[in-house]
Length: 89
Ligand SMILES: [Zn+2]
Image (tube, rainbow, N blue to C red; front, side, top):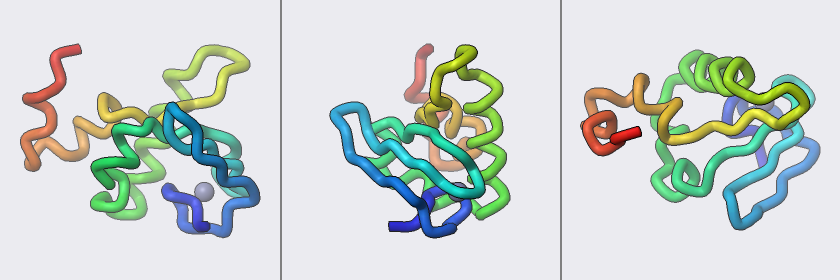
């Protein structure tokens, strides 16, 4: 399976209860929240937007923790879809 962010061939791709866990040779290790996977929000973004979201996730991650792409991070990129209005956090 390819990396959801950069479409490179990811080395490690595991589905967990929380979503997907990815080890990409370009992006590094990160998680994609199950809510993002379920709604396929990441696929709707342009490639450069996906990388942007991943970079945001990396900046938000706790030291030593894997970054996670969440619907909250995606919201600013999908405002036209009305997603932002459904997120109260
Ligand atoms: Zn990647």
